[in-house]
Image: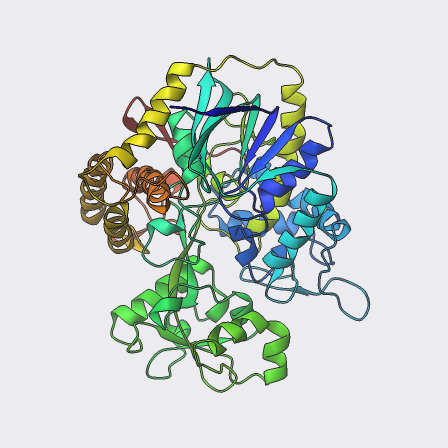
Length: 552
């Protein structure tokens, strides 16, 4: 039951683009800041972002236009206030990144090179090749090191602590040593990313296990739009070791062509005007239907062609995609790629206001763990951009908040209770390994809570996930070593994924219409009366859902 206590005024959990930006902003105040990540610094999921980020940097694109297409793309259940803040402020955040050393692509005139993704009448997307996330992370990491932000990598926070609806601390383990650490803090900024690992096929990093959603629920935070799970239309389909790896939207937006096994350009059947640059949810459903109709390849996929481009164009526009396929023996300058939708992004998350505050005092959230910007469907290029705007805002407001309050005394009883819960996974000699529960969860989410849904399968999924939650209490780590214990980490992450899956299913059952990423075959039409957000919260052990008005 031993543990170490560390005191810090602001704790930032998650060291991707949003977490780094929050920490950088908070550090300006001179307060004590600690940044934690499950990965080695610089290796967060943000680095996997490819195509670019949206910002109205070059006319005729304007912040107003950016806001308009974001709301349209989100089927009008976005938080309008957050969208307007985002689109107005992101140009300044691009200049911040340049000051941190990020060199965006530019044209001969010196202006930013911009390209138009789906719904973009005017080009908004600025980029660094097709590895924008990687370059952005490098700039942010360099800036964080330059200004001396304290960072602990390979760290897992398992529970937040609150008193009288205020955040007062957090408990976790050092993954390298399995030692327990308690943080006494005045404010916590969650930037923990999504939960892609709960699906069988995903573009997400292995670290995206829904940690932030689960921790926030446990302290009473409200979540919205959790039914809105985005499937990127083009993930690698073959070989199995590469299944789900992202093939950037930049490919289709620059003239990539989708064909079925017969060679037909099938998007003409579904969206004859937009074709390959229809919205992500629309292209994903189209590919799903083609394969379901028996028109897919032997690898359960469709073809994405860029072999009508010159090799020089391929290496200029999508060098990383070229490398991905070369590594598995496919030269995309000569033959097509095989692609299929891959779980990509959760549009929902912790309900926040314009300063990234949740309904729990001192608890902030930014980027994918938060909600409001994307509504029912996220436009490509809006995610890593969003994190820069609201990461900064979270850092700014948290510093103002913590200057007004004192530290609260931590409950030793609550700390010991959490330590005992974690230790039980190691002590269990009987029980199910976490990997078995995770495998079952992946299958049920992929098959029953996927691109198309209906009440029967959602209710089946609910029963299965409830059963897995009960079984998860008896998970066992197969080793009791007091150093790095991967099984123990899996136990903690699987529990978070199950809680996240539970709220996705509950929200999906309540929304009896089809809107954006939420497609109900039993309710195929979009209905005006459902232009609302689904709010989810925890009351005791019970999950409560409610439809609430959109913030305009």
